[in-house]
Image (cartoon, rainbow, N blue to C red; front, side):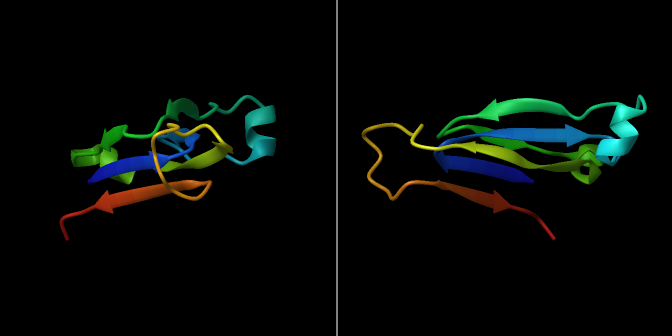
Length: 81
């Protein structure tokens, strides 16, 4: 899977296990988080395709000034099925 981010930056969280907030409070592993900026490409392959993942926060008005698009972000995901 290949994922391309365009527009505002975001925080992208991922984990091998799905944990609720209450489980994290009790000591379960927190998801790891990375920041994706406009133009970043993320590649998942093999077993990594099955990890739990998602955007947890969008940083509004944090896109390149030269990018002519409405506020927000666009994610293009390409998968082989």
